[in-house]
Length: 166
Image (cartoon, rainbow, N blue to C red; front, side, top):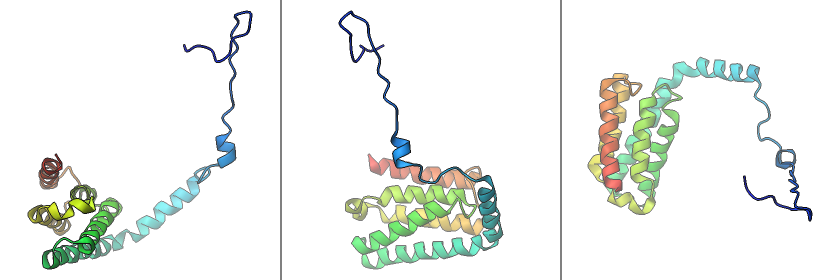
């Protein structure tokens, strides 16, 4: 136990407990979760799930276009930012669209190109590997890392990115 903050002249210690009033002052950002609202949101998401395949394909098409721009114009500030933006979008949307393996692979691509100053150093073949792996997962319905091919693709790409990051 640490030394008391205040000692009385007689040697007795007095501990002063300061109440934590920060929550009262700031409040909570979202308040209490309403189970009914959560259930309603989940139902709405489920009703939209029939459109996930098309939306995912639209995101993959944007990623492919960004990769094509990098190949045509080189990795510059604009092409690199677009590639990163679309990879980051897929990182966030993959799991929502029921393809968590895409979240993982897109996350690896994001790690490879997240620092704008280092983007030009990213090997083109490794960018291609990530984009092609994402396309293959969509095409072949590989949804999660439990799938042998999905696991192999994700691990191989992550290892190569980790080797470059050293």
